Image (cartoon, rainbow, N blue to C red; front, side):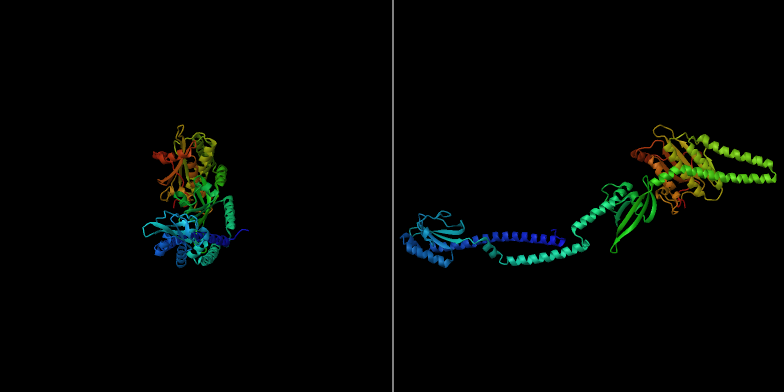
Length: 543
């Protein structure tokens, strides 16, 4: 039968009490033995010395009066309380003894008969003293003895109240164990140790089986719990529990909010931070994380389709406006004006398309810029490509990354300029050449109010939009994530508007190489004519 928590504590307490009492009893026995030897030994020696100094005993031994010697020995024994008094002759044979069987037999002594001696012989404590005659010669030996008490008698003499002590200690231990068990059971909600162990195992299994990341921190931002998914999403060490949050991770996880979209490393996460309390006492926070990186990747794959749709919509709108214009001119009979209008419109469209396709050999990027140019024209924003912008054909992955980065930068620029006409967006695209360090650089400049964040790089670190639910608010954060993943960089500064510069290496670099590149290089244009420009930052990043 398995004992309860109270039963285990009681058994433990009683075991401790028994062990302690046994140790005390052993110590008491040792002390009682030492005390018995000291006190009784001195008393026996004194009795033997007194008997040896009796003149009648000396005379009886010298003249061999055995009856007289036996009477003296018995009288000494009766008066002294010794267990026995034995008289031994010079030849060490017993002359007088309480045991008649010993008379005439040799008696072993503990030392030389000429000297006094006290010690243990068998189960007796004895003392013997020489008897010196009138001629100063040895005439006999007086031997006094005391039978050793049993260990129980010695223990009872040393601790006469041992049973009382044991009973009192047992009652105290029983009461203490009961109170301690009650307190512990109250703190453990009435569960037994095996139930607590089972609950912990179940909690661990459930926690690490959750697909979402779960992380808890205490009031000092020290990690108290982290499941496998949280460790994976945040790149935490396996032994992160007990260690404080630091750096960018601390800034990211200590900001309160629900369903915040954040970008960390190369992942887009939905983050919730909720307080944890128990019995009215604040204990810390629990943070849940959901990975949205796959959704963002899907969005990137749909970017080209979206850009094409936007271009078709803008061109359809523009074509409708032009057809209305032509129809009105025809009704007015302005046939020559219709011809000039059609010719001018065709030449402007062909000129823009030719300008882009002649300089940019990548079809995806060229299609994107044509679509954005149509959108800009629809909003009354001038869109132009900087002279000297040239780019060859790119591989499929780099082309997709470049389309995403350029599209987000141009969209932010259009958002920064707003609906008011008269704005301007200038774009530059070029490659840096080289074999190992070849990169594609894209710069976007707008004539808007610029980036208001201090420092300006904060627009990338925010990783979420101030417009709740606006997925496009992640544009700059996603652009930075793409550049960082490839080992490139993206920067921003104000110069008559916001200027964004992104650098994407043709070949992706390993993590160690990326850190060196980001620390040692900042891509930009040295000449004013070649300086690119970009759209405004994320919503809330400018103003």
